[in-house]
Length: 389
Image (cartoon, rainbow, N blue to C red; front, side, top):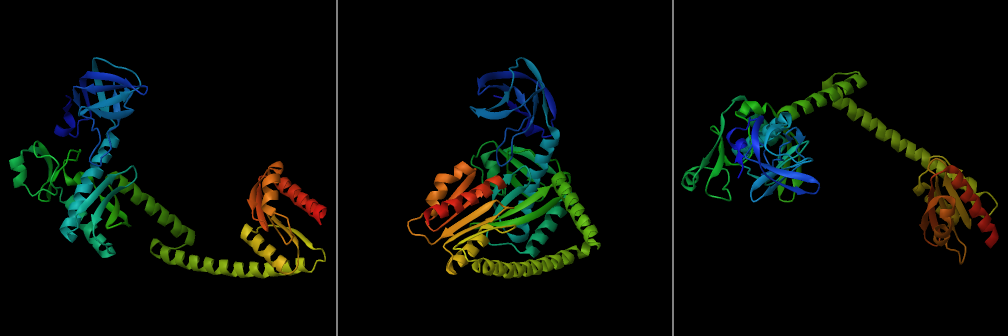
């Protein structure tokens, strides 16, 4: 059985120990250590990263409740172990921050935490109950950062079943003997096996990022410590760049963005109106051609526009319509011919022209990788039409 150093000293960064056991699996050599400060993962917290005998730990798995570490080479005897301290300290900040934020939601809003996940980008907790208001989130965020400013002591220790019964723990653990308690002075007693900082001040900062509904609960996304600091830096950088773009100050950026969005929406609406008028003129022009077949290539029309125009041309009396867009390399065919199936023709011939597509008896569409293939297929369709009428 490995001695779990991380339970006694979460700040143990390197140590020497003996290889206790080993086995090979999936191309890795898994070793257990007589003493280990590597947190193996669990309780929502990921496993630590680091090295054993200068070999990177590639995987962690448990065998008979003993953590084993996967290495690319086999090692024996006495080894030096090192934890990726930047990664570990980040996890400690996030995990302790989760304890603090969950405590703040209980203290301010009486909202218990029912779920926790510590990811690479953000940390989440799930709270029971309905949607939180902006005012409630701000009050809770203010409270949790006040707990950080207080720099309250954080300690961990084991209790017996009798001692556990006397503590106002946040939740009851699944076991009753040798339960590890993480205590935040004056805030909570929380059964937890994870690694934590020594005081709330070491969390540094907690920032709530967003919320979203999860069935009967609310999911809170947040960051702590260095993660929150880096996100804050990025947000300020974005706001300042936006302010420079609009030649204004950061307080007026939202107003400027709102105005630009409104102007853009109006411009898009106007462009759609003009495009609609142009489309009508183009359809009229094609209708007035004498031939029963209508063929035209455009620039900048999507498939829906081509289909819409083709349908109008059929209604106006055309019997075979081929419309395409050179920029998008898209093509639409529609007709009023008896015993002719557009989709079947496309399915049996498109591959010879480097195209893909299909459709129904009356209308089909295709796309091409190269403009020359589109043009060849348009010519093929015209020749095919002439051969069947």
